[in-house]
Image (cartoon, rainbow, N blue to C red; front, side, top):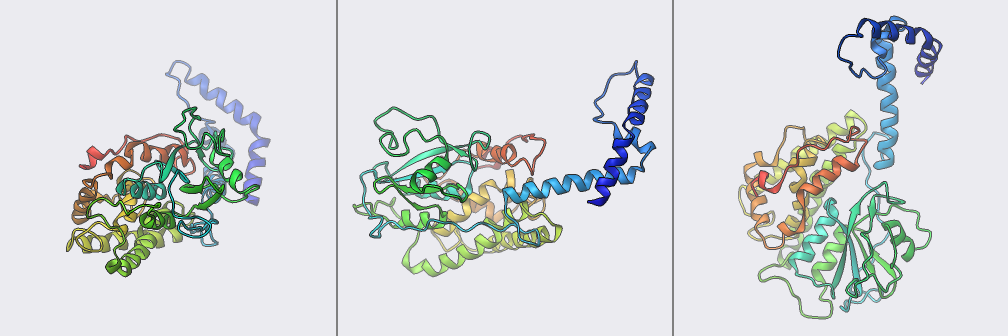
Length: 384
């Protein structure tokens, strides 16, 4: 930091001389096409201060600001590794506090870009859950309008079909106001997915894996209404599904975020190795069977699917997960699995892939400071 202050003071003391040098350079190029050269520091100030020190100052200053912004976006441990926050609310449908019943009692807040929300959306679709069982608000990602976090609610509807119309959430503008309504003076992160109980005015859970398991098991006061043949957590595969969930989360679901949110080379290298290990393990398993735990689509596939759908458009090129050159389309067995999953009724309707990928480039500005959104990787381009 001492170097930064010294170099900065030298630059400030020589501003008049730098300005004079710039004016001379401009006069010599007066008849040429004008170009934006920024502050033109390298051409002018380098005659006073060695270029190496100017470059060093710029790099280290930018890195300092970047690491501070990354820590705000994604909490870090001392090694520069992303440390995912623990979730505060861990209620369960089917308990005394949250009875397993219908009648519009339960409501979800989900955002299309978020892979954790996508898991929950998949369960809703695959179980054909109706608004009387669990209703849904589709959040909009806009951290400029949001008062905390990145999620805002769509414009309130006056329709009698709006489940929030007569609740304490009527008029809420963003997810912070939802958290505050159910848990006054809440200080944590306002994350989605969020499952709430509109009858007791309590938050049930904001942990995606718990919500997925709840919605798989809940009957909402009626007979189980899974699609024919669709049982996401069959008892005979429960242990294998749990074990698969553990390693796919560590190596892939969270592994890609550990790559993208690393603030040190060492932390990134460890995470990148994990992602490669996870992809290799998936490729090996899926070369021998149709799905992760056998011949049928289960919760293990559901939890991995949102990550794999976003990989070619976001996690590879933006998060550098496993290296920027890796694509799911280049893993023959994983790619075949992805297409099989996409063909299941309710899956393709669960996501707007172009919008989801664009959101990362649009909103995660510490990773994409220029805000340029690349040409979208669509489902059609992937070959789904």
